[in-house]
Length: 280
Image (cartoon, rainbow, N blue to C red; front, side):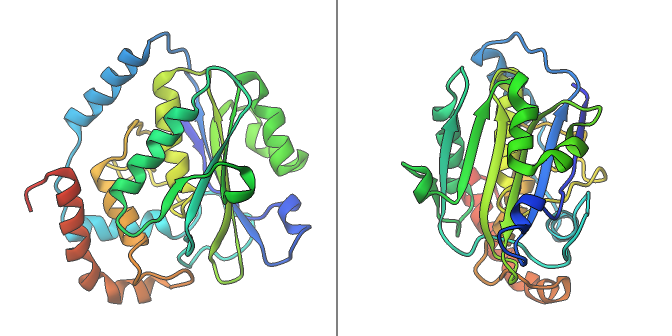
């Protein structure tokens, strides 16, 4: 499957009309080929194939390099600073706004459970109502994706996102002036195929937590235009566990993080090895 991706977009006209210090980061995944006739069994076979080929051993230097490439910066930069850590510093609660069939709410909940089990210091769970949530996952039909993007981001920015492209999923977040994420919106097409949905929901939910930069030079991360996983891979578990270690705070610079990494990496390695049954 050929994949192209619109990267993070900083600054939202709709969001900025509310509070001047609120910024939004947006990342979208565009699938040029979306015809998947397979069943859930076929999806599992796609995921299994990728799991069997997954690289699981990385040096400290490879992990640190990926962290700084993905967590800092923004692939598509409009406004606002992108040289700081951006993350939630509150419990994350996810609400599913299901506007299409098939109903994939249970799949979203399963992915949220998996993310919670893999990121040690992240408090993430499903919410019963939109009011309780700070992450909203909107599930739509493929034919409704463009009008949904317009509703979320305004006509001008939506036109930039969908121009000559066909996005199947995207995510964005608003952060305050201390770089703490306040709310995330994820939009996913439900009728583009089983594997497409699985790949989209993992990537967009994880990017909604802060790591919004894509990098084509990292072959073992889902945050790469040419890579589709369909599951929470080992390498990205390292990156997210570093990001959500309590010693890493929103607003930190690269130099501040570099000073802490020697202390954090051993703990992250031990955790990732434990939850995945790896040999240290």
